[in-house]
Each structure stands twice: as structure tokens, then as C-alpha cells.
Length: 266
Image (cartoon, rainbow, N blue to C red):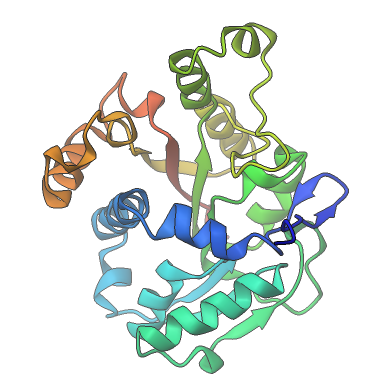
């Protein structure tokens, strides 16, 4: 069996060649279910008109992957543009959307890296950038461009891999020298992100760009570390994750951080 290789542009990671593995390991598990449930809870709390479908919005999904959140938004009548550089991920998205009974041909797909968006992509009233920054070699260099795609008065939904969680995970695995050296990048053939980010630094960068962070939640605080994942039902795990997700110090140790930030209106 030929080992799948991962395409790179400079040092960014693009998921051609490992897309099936990525889908199986990330989305096809409890981890994926917890992630989606907590993201949707944040939308329910902060953007009720979005989840009810009462007010159709233009949504731009950057680094869309399979587009699970976008699929739910499309079903509610929102207008979607999905940007994804990996054609294999686009193929998986097509299969997933068909399974969900959604016509993916009704949405616009753009094959591009987030740093090289073509002209003519409209600004979104909601821009999704979920599990994107941590796969870029220089995530903070890309952040102004991402923020620039948000329409005035619109929202940015930013979910990223937490550096604090990377430290904690390496400590528990006994990788003490890696922690002391600050070497927390995922190895080349692994699915560990290459650029884990500190929540405080991302929060400050958004404020420097003029955004107001309205929601700060931790995603997967404890469930990854349960000795027996089956000792509690999925619903109980999600309920407890949600209970802790906005409490310190727990949220700052979560595997992922979700920020919802609003851009000032003109």
C-alpha cells in the first residue's frame, strides 16, 4: 500500500492524500460530535436569527473541509460560499452533503488557499474559519485577510487549536523535552496541527483589527482525556463540556478555542 503524502504550499498543510483519514479520525468520532454541538450552542446563544433561519445571511466558509456546519446553514436557507484548497476534501464534502439530503451544487465552491483568495468573493455577514489557522505556517499573517472578508457589522467565527492544550497533552505523554523546548508542532505525517495558538494572543489580534470578541468558549476540555470514553453517554459528555466551556481555568485548557467576534458597522 502506497503511503499517502500530504501536499504542501510552502509550509502550510493541505489535506490531499489524507482526507479520508482526516475525516475518520476527526469527524467520525465523539470528538467531532462534541465539537459540532458546542459550536452550534455558541451560534444559538449569540446568533439566534442564524440558527432559526429567520434572517438569511451570506456565509463564507474558509478552509471549509467537509463543510458540516455550512451544510446545516444551507439547510436553513443561508447563502454559502465555501473555500477549500484540497480537491479531495471537496469530494468528501459532496458525498457528505448528499448523505444529508443537501444539494451542494446550490453553493459556490472556490478552490484556493485562504492567503490567495481570487477577486470577486463577496464579504460574508458570517465568516467561518474553523480549524484553519493552526494548519498555516504563519497564522497571524493570514488573520488580517480573513478579517477583511467580514462585512461591516458582520461576525467572524474563529476556532483554532489551543497551544495550552498542546503543552498539557505533551506533558501527559511524557514529552517533557518537547515542552521545555517549546516544540509543539505536529510531526509531518501526523494529524497534529503545525501552529497551535495561544488564546490570549488571538483575542488581542482580533481586537487590534477592530473586532469585539463577544463569545469565548473552550471546545473539548476533558472528554479527550477520559480513561474510558464510554463510561458516560455522549449527551452527558456534551452537557458537561458545555457547562465548563466558558469557565476559567477550564476553557483556556480546552483542545480548541472558539471565538465569535463582531466587526464594527460603518
